[in-house]
Length: 397
Image 1: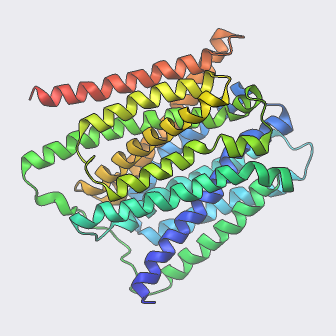
Image 2: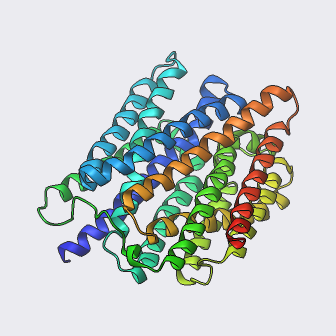
Image 3: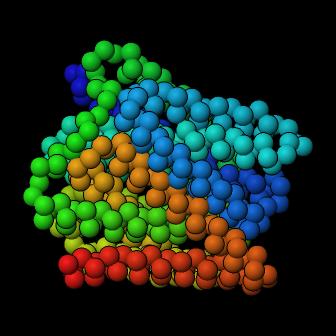
């Protein structure tokens, strides 16, 4: 295998290891906190909001750091932070009287490292690609991380049933060691990968009207994507409560509540091969509407016969919205790692806002079991209004 092809494969392997490891750790951390310390949905939502806020700031900063100091330099210290957090968790997991603050601190380290990995890898997989190749590379990138995400979500509950909660710390540690070693190996190969990014993107010379269209869709996608993650991170944080309502144990919850992840993966596969959705407002707004309806159904309906098809719709909606944000970020001119940082920072803001609104709604509404879902659903509606408003403003220009 040529060095260039091996480096390309190594980047996707690092991506898969990071996705599987961080999903298994972070998504099931809420089950761990519920089982170990008796946390309710409200405490889990508060934790999710705090971690989301950290991811937002760290992602934005990491995109700029990667652009200035190099992709592989950034990856090495980012993987080091993740490994530190996982080792910290393993150390305190065996202590029955360890305070929750120790596990929260470990999660912060993991989130700081993870927030630097994603914008860096996004820039690496698309850097140097010609205009016609950006869509292909972004598509492969989306499929790899989404497949690893869905697999980790699907298998996580069964792994916990079989090996206990220690598995959510130990298995990610092994995978992230592999990613860390690959990053070091690539860094030690002279000339295998450019360590800096260009200041201008491929589309810098495009006509003003085309750049205006691209910029408009980039703005709409950057707004839509955090609202998508408002829904995703809220759902993940309250999944223990959803499983309790549907009378599912941890293993069954991992299997049946991961359907939306596979639906999102399927959406990525379709959107990768079919590009008719590019710069089509109707597809984006339809995904936002579907996101709101399916989210409300998953969080409120007590019947699997409703929750399962709602997950299919939720997966399609989140897939198209995410794909739009990342594709437009990489296709539009500019420093790719900085655009990737903005893309990931928007995700972090969504990860913070959704759980924060859910937790606040539950705090204000007391015992009302639907308060959190209602508050976040209304927030998603504001996202739809914001995207439509941008479209109307452009139409009036």
